[in-house]
Image: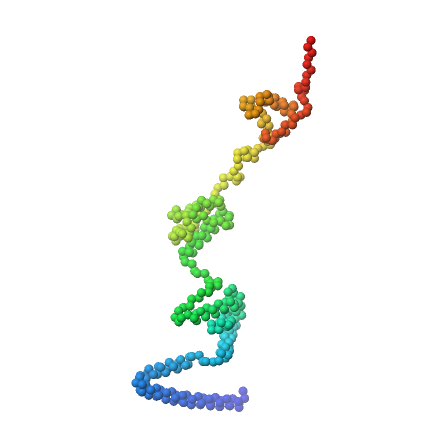
Length: 345
């Protein structure tokens, strides 16, 4: 910096200090005069000076902290500049400390206002892409603020807008215990039965046979009911028995792998080829009474029947009598040929 310029700046700074000192002296003189006027006013009004001074202080503070009346255009520009500066500050925090953030500002007095979303790029993208947020979320927030503004002073405006993805309420110890009993019993049943969607039959344990398993060691002091209806002590007893191995599930013994069938079907299933070729049905016991509709003339006994089969008839063999068929043979046996009658002399 050049010497002459530096000297000039020092001269101006000294002059500003001198003017500031004179200004404070004049201001102090005005303040003393104001206090003297307040004392004179208090004496004329026959009131304590402290009361008058406190009232003046209240007026001063009210005027000092009241918002300045400015045109709407300049107010909007000032608000916009403040929001932009705040957003830039948050972006600077990301560069300095790696902090991520976003903020949303709406104007409840202006329904046409679309709000302002500021913060880091990641924070703004999170708000825009999150379900229920974005422009719709800003509109809901603005409506809620408008309702809160219409409520009477002193009343709390409860939000009637459902929260999106609100964190679940923390469950109490009893609820956590019931959930653990449900989960452990279900896992044990599915592990033993091999059925991935198997469920416990809480009120009727005998129905577990549909999965081919049964429960062993259910606490006798605990009724067969759902954990939601059991007491905390009963649920603890079931859980403790399951943990210690006193209560467990086991597979039921399978009596027979094949399905039950009738006696005739089992006999047919186990029949050998020799049994299938059996033609004993063609033989009838002579002591057995004749079937209804048959005549003794046609009944020639077992030997005659067998001879007919061998000599005069061809019979198709079938394991059952109903499937048999007799095919007559056109050839005649030698004994059946007509004999020439001897001549009588």
